[in-house]
Length: 268
Picture (cartoon, rainbow, N blue to C red):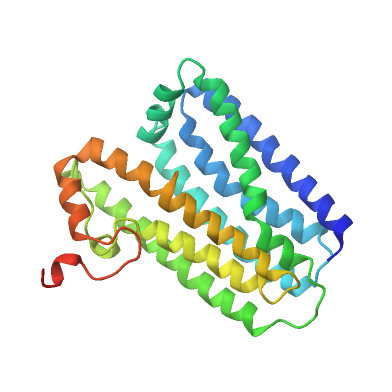
């Protein structure tokens, strides 16, 4: 691994991601909707992938494969979030409304640093991409093919879960109800599960490169964030506030994370 190349790539990616988040914060401040940060957190990964594809010294075909994976996944998720958030731009998501209340009267200042942390987290989570795009070996490893296959399964699964939830919400008859159809019949957060699985696939891909074991940091961070910080806890708190007893019943009958059999299908 070329340390000078790695250092420069990290600096370029940090400048790009944090610079984008400064602009996003100005927009969020103007419209009073911090939820737009989610869109650009997703879009920042394709930005990193483009920088690495153009500037990293690794083998071209490997760079093309991993960067294409990152760009496709980032654009899909970012566009999905943009479609949802931009339809209700004047209505901030409940999680961010709660943060705004907790951070008052300095919420805008704290949101600025929160946005910057999101940009930094983009680069930190991109460890598997840095490792893979610095690999100059001209042989694509079976581990890299396995990672690509696992990536396809995870992106497809997350896209299906997102589509099922969006379809459920479009039906006016479901207003105020909890989505319990399709993958949501088995897991309260199938989208989060497949998101984590995608990051695990990047780790598998990176294992074929020198220092690839370090890529475990990314799925480990994602798993911690989803289970303990900004993912499931915040989402479930908001669901309990908005849906009350209906969501409590849903919690009792489904797996919290991994899509699996419904609990009420087993004998008590």
